[in-house]
Image (cartoon, rainbow, N blue to C red):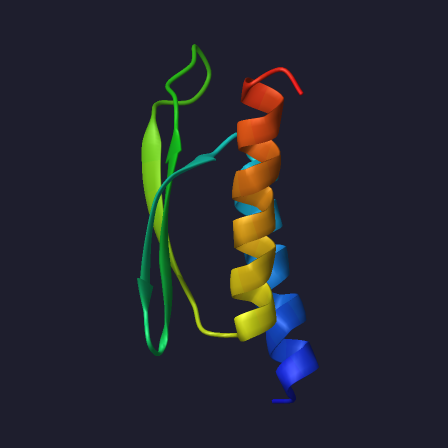
Length: 78
C-alpha cells in the first residue's frame, strides 16, 4: 500500500469515529506509531463506548495532532 493510501485509510478511520460522536481522550506516541484512545459518552439511544486506534502513518499522526489543537482552541473560545 502506498504511503498516501495508508494516510487516507487512517485519516478516514479517525474521522469516522469523530463523526460517530467519539472524542479523543488519550494519545500515546511511540517511535513506530501513535495509539489514539476514543470515548463516546452514553446517550439514550447508544451506550457509552471506547475505541483504540493505532496510527502508523506520519501524516495521519500530524492530522490527529491538528485535530487536538483545533479542539483545544474551540474549548478555549478562540
